[in-house]
Image 1: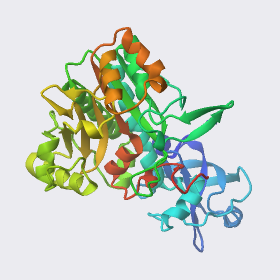
Image 2: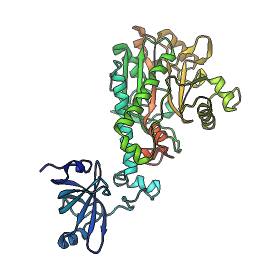
Image 3: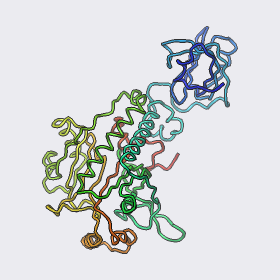
Image 4: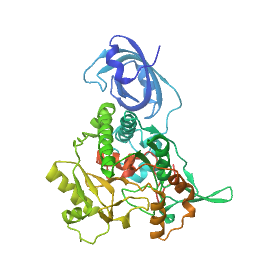
Length: 428
């Protein structure tokens, strides 16, 4: 007899079936006991009336793994819309040691540090696993959207010989006696691969040795990176980003609708054209000084409120960031060289995506490095490709955990990360 999932019970009314999962909850009444079994699809209710079976059930603890063979009877009040009667319950292991919190309660009452310390069991709670299902669906939508537009998925090294943006923000390591670093991003490699495939993307970990201890930063996170060639300017990149976000949110709705329902949320609509403001205008809207070199979190929140109020949009592009605040490979605005063809995308008042047009001429790279007083040698392998012809190109990167946190309304990005790595945490 093949095992079925709890969500399939209603299709087997009157039949004898086999389900398996974890003991989610037991309700022991005087003449009857109810066993709630949790599997990957949800909950199934098992009615136990036989005295011997009931006595055996009393010995089981929550989270014990069991197998149940029973006949399915219709019951609209049961968790999965059906009820199993006359069951045979067989433990598939020893009684579980109960975790330090009740997983059967609607919300986890344990503090976030306690949840993270006990992540393998805390993640079993429907609200925690729902966020991870949303994350998986978002990545599936990311890939599907770009695959349909002839992008090629690539896989780049995560151990590199030089930093991408700042040597102060990398994790150094010993590579067989030579210095090496964990990659801050696949930026250099995805640009080089534009010279091979024209359009590429990657889903992978990136590492930032920034001593942040905030609710929005991790030392390791998942980056959804895109790079495309033969662009006119950064606006071509922004259009691809808009379509990618729409595809991600569409996939979340389609593939993780149950997870959205568990969390009581709906995926927002992406406007056909996301509103955009230049950095100088963004400073005015946010009430920031005109000489402010970057947007602070308070400015981003003010811009998010403005976008909702003026455009009914949860998303807002801020374009033309000052060149002084962008990496050396960023293309300047020919009409205003102090400003860039770079952009950020704000989602509900929080920076979610950074992107823009890149330099593509070798001499421009030499000039950009010289202007910043940086040597050429550490970037020689990267720069060499630009001597051999590279098209105008640009790209962006989405932080997956930050995207899911903002979508679900999580107060801390660690709530939507399975095993977060940050300033203080290396385990479990």
